Image (cartoon, rainbow, N blue to C red; front, side, top):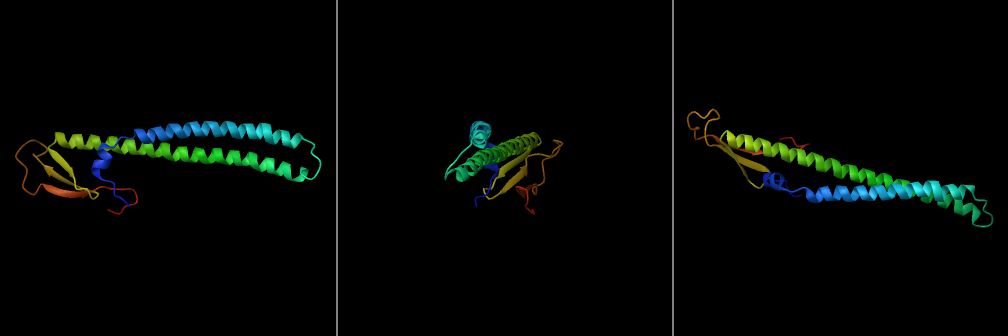
Length: 151
C-alpha cells in the first residue's frame, strides 16, 4: 500500500472527491425517488390487485421483494455518500490544519521538507524568539501520524 506523504496531503486538490460527493448526492436522490415509487406505486398496487392463476402466488412476493431492493439500494447509496462526504470533510480539515501549522512554523523559522516515506525533515533557521542563531543540532525527523498508528 502506498504511503501518504507530506507533499501529497499538503498540495492535493480535493475537487475530484468533492465531485464524487455531488455525483453520489444525485444518485441518492434518484434512488430515493425510485424506492418511493416502488413502495407507493408498484408494491401498493400489487397488494391491492386480485391476481388469480399460476402466477398469483409468485408475483406479489416478487414485487414486494423488488420494491424492498430499491429501498436497500437507496440505503447503500446513502452510506457510500456519507463515507465520501465524511472523508472529504476530514481530509480538507487535516489539510487546512497542516497548512496552518506549516505557515505558522515558517513564521518562526521552522522549515519542513518531505522525505517521501511518510516522514518529514525539519530545521530551525532561527530561534523561535528571533534571538541567537539556532544550535547546529536543530534538525530532526518526524513521522506523519495516521489514526491507528503507534508512532
